[in-house]
Amino acid sequence: MSYVRVSTLDQARRGSEPEGLSIPAQREANRRRALEMGALVVAEFVERGRSGRSIERPELQRMLEYIQDRPVDFVIVHKIDRLARNRADDAAITRTIQNTGAYLVSTTEAISTTPSGRLLHGIMASIAEFYSQNLATEVMKGMRQKAIHGGTPGRAPLGYLNERRFDDGREVRAITIDPERAEHVIWAFHAYATGEWSVTRLAAELEARGLTTRPGPNTPAGPLTVNGLHRLLRRPYYKGVVVHNGVAHPGRHEPLIDPVTWASVQDILTSRRNGERSRQHDHYLKGTVFCIECGRRLIMQHTRTKTGRVYEYFVCHRRRDTVCQQREALPISGVEQRVEDLYRTIELNPGQRERIEQIVLAKLHRQQAVNDQRLEAIAVETETVEANQAKLLEAYYADAVPRDVFLTHQRRLNSELANLVRERARLESENTEILERVRDALDLLQDVHATYTNAPVTVRKQLNQAIFSGIFLGPEPTQIRTELNEPFATITQPG
Image (tube, rainbow, N blue to C red):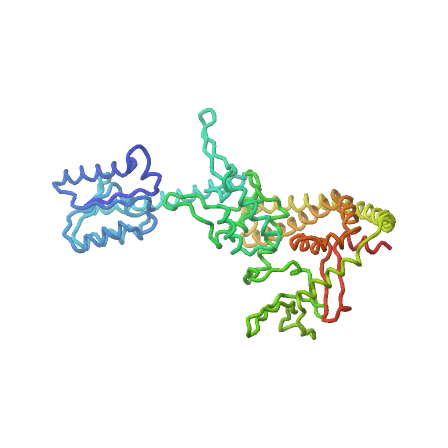
């Protein structure tokens, strides 16, 4: 009986032969050895793409079951390491074979049941174990060095491609952007950063848009699962960071996502750790109106009468730990009218606009100077954090810092850097867009009631979210309070 194994599917497919090159070579060597012993190969078990480090191989188990029930004189392998890559597994497999009355034969090694043959068998098993462990160590060392220099160990994630090319006869491996999938990945990050999507809804939308995983050797391309999307959104690789064995390194590949968007996505994922629920009812005032008593969101509630008629209300999203006296449901139509009337109170006439614009711009120019000073400080702080990251990494690879201590400090430094990135992006955005935002806001406030009244619900929602950080309502028409976003809060309070 013959047993043949190759470790990887690439070996099984190499060359022009259907089974590659190694499998036919082992098969032929085993058959020749059988003929030399005057035996016939009555059965053959071929293991394609299975590591010898595990005894749980389908064909190996089939072979061991086969010899339990049938008389077999010899089990022939090309080398001892085809059976096992460690001494414990080798001893267990050899014992099972011998207990059936069969002999283990190697076509390249002079093993036998004699003392010298057993000694050689033990030596070859030890060499196989050493080779396996040393190979794993060298592979890990190579992967670590690749990550240190910003390379990508293994297969690039969705949105990227592993490219192999030859430059002056030298093989060059690089990571390139996948033109078919990268745009979907970018959209997914930016969509989730808005806070309007659950991971479940986002996965369904990506499937509708045509995003599929890359096909593998044994798996076809298919839609991205919810868990797969969650892992994708957590990967710092998309902001240009390679993580190997828990250690983060600046990558050489082109980031698909800017650090600010990536940080926003992480904040949302963390805030929804205990689960998220897609919205069942939508309305353009959701997220804008709040309870004036306790400050909780007003949520939609549908009540159906016995006759089938449906009434829609906004109600306070009370929790058990919240003391709120507002029990009355607010009819949605009434809330819509109250918000529409509210827009009359924030309009500006041309004279008011001119006076306010001068005051506001003066304030904003002063704020801009403060922002510039803070940006200079952020640049210094960022350099310090990055230098500390480099020192920490150097100390870790010099074995001067234990792994648990290293990971703790790395997480702290990464968090500090992420906060600095967010703050810098916010201040730079304020400095570059500040005048345009103010003038746009003043233009809008000159006729905002007419604009809001005539706008479709999608535009009304955008106006509400742009102008108000919250509209707080009670059951009585006079019970209304607003909090405005900038620059509207400054514009409407010019003193």
